[in-house]
Image (cartoon, rainbow, N blue to C red; front, side):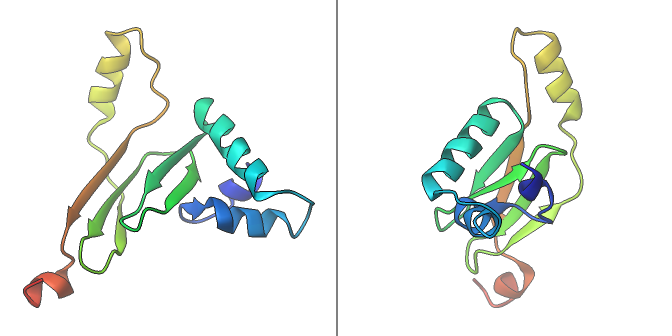
Length: 116
């Protein structure tokens, strides 16, 4: 978990595995199991990229992205207007919300200027 918290951006299980195995003997399957357990505890969230790669990050704040459908680059959004909705949903239901994700898909400026 500490290595994941030190990452400045969402990271793949494979990249985490490479970082962890520098310091201890561990298998890739163990990394996936640990990430899954942390996800179920609400400590880790994940998102899937356009290429199908799953990226993980510690739940310290919500992460929102705009992703270009042409080049695949993701741009983080530093705003979140869903906190009120999240509070209402949690207050009026018997559901504990650990985190939420929000992704927008379109074309980044260089791609849209080129006509896609």
